[in-house]
Length: 242
Image 1 (spheres, rainbow, N blue to C red):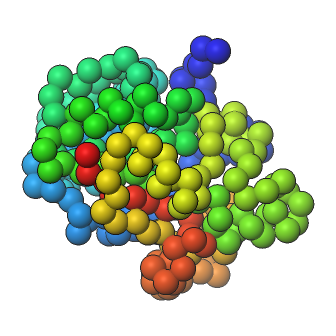
Image 2 (cartoon, helix red, strand yellow):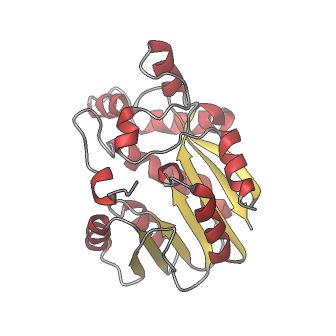
């Protein structure tokens, strides 16, 4: 079935596509992954409004963005407003970025793919020798998600909820299924982990933060605890080489 990528990122009545928590979370993603970055250029697959693109431009001199939603390309291009960023409109299954990359980022994107394997195998061809693929996905086993299962709000940890489905999610990964996915495509995993212990849902984090109940020190504590208990974090990641 054909998908309209320009509608999947829209907020719905019961669920926002991006919360304040998501933007705070991105800073910790960079922090967790930075030690594995390779010198050179970068490809970002999927950009939303360009917030993560801006963070990548603080690290890399050249960033190419491949995005399937024309509306998001225009929003991100305006928000980034940097000549070092190149934007390409195209679906991952069909597009050709025209060069190879030292670093490729699939950040909260893999779970949106109807058929991940063909895309991951194409990504292998886009990596330079010694290049690295960084895959970050929402974690099925996040503490907040397991609490939601206990409350009867979600059927099981890895379920794709109706709200997630409307926003384009096709799968909810845990560390073992994420590792299996990338290995099936021929990648070697060099590092794995979790980012930010997550005791609350995104909207609860936002409400508590705005009310001053939690602060930056709390997020720092969640980051430190997430390194000890990656299976309970908001996001999980793997760093791969072809």
